[in-house]
Length: 81
Image (cartoon, rainbow, N blue to C red):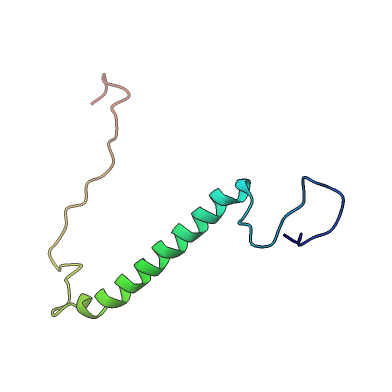
């Protein structure tokens, strides 16, 4: 085998055709799984986006009167009424 990079440091020597270093494998796995999940979510979103259109508009607010409740006011002087 022919080394890809020269030098006398045996710890930094790598050969062509070898995979990523051991400490980079976890990060590489995380990136690959994340990209697969993002691609899958994007595909599912494009498939479901056509059927998500509502037939009738949703009513968010109504014209009925609403009772307003004021905040609690504690009686600090119970002797006075």
